[in-house]
Image (cartoon, rainbow, N blue to C red; front, top):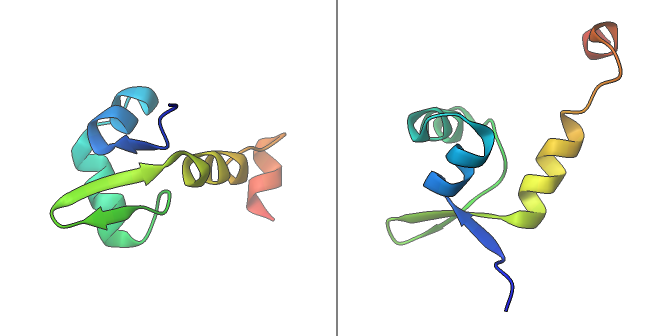
Length: 65
C-alpha cells in the first residue's frame, strides 16, 4: 500500500525546511493544505503536489504579475 500522507517532519526533510517553518506557514495560511487529526498534522500528497505546481514559474518576472 502506497503512502497517501506525509508527516510534518517528512515534508520538512523533503523540502529542506524546518518543521517550525511549516508550523509558521500553517498559522499564516501559507503552504499546502493539511489535515489535523487530534494533535497530529499530516499533509496529503495530492495537496503537496498541487502546492508545488502552483509554485512553478518560468521566470522571475512571471511571479510579479
